[in-house]
Image (cartoon, rainbow, N blue to C red; front, side):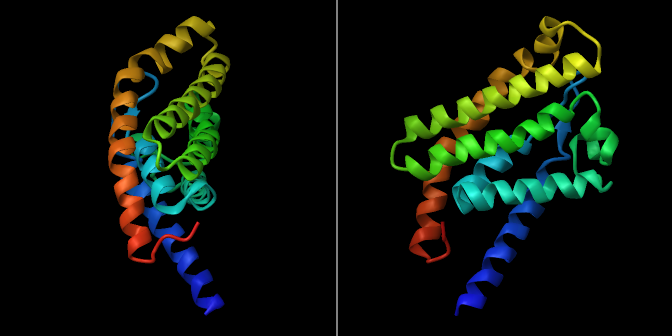
Length: 182
């Protein structure tokens, strides 16, 4: 039985990584940093899998993109994407997943705290991404903030709201079906 649960864990992490791979490339170009659905997919992975497995599923996605598969925004991939101007946001999603996942795992019954955790995690991702964008694009921090954060706040808040409202129901259904294993 224990081996079966390990196989199940690996399979469900892989399925969630695949979902992120499907949603990640879907993006709207708005400048140097495109609007993508990656963070929404991560939030749902965290509700469906918990902090640890959800973060692992994102890291698998990131590694798939790193080796060249076109899973990043605008169907791009490779080391140059991680080392390029938007690489800080891609790496920042790991920290976003850890922070948001902590709140989601520990406060699932308190939507406002889950919302706050996702906002905090997104802010950390914004900070890391802005620092890297400023360095890589050789632009002042204020310009990097304008290019990589300000434009995205309304859309990211909508994605967080969607996840905060739908996520607990997803987790509850998985728990009721004996499919959620933290």
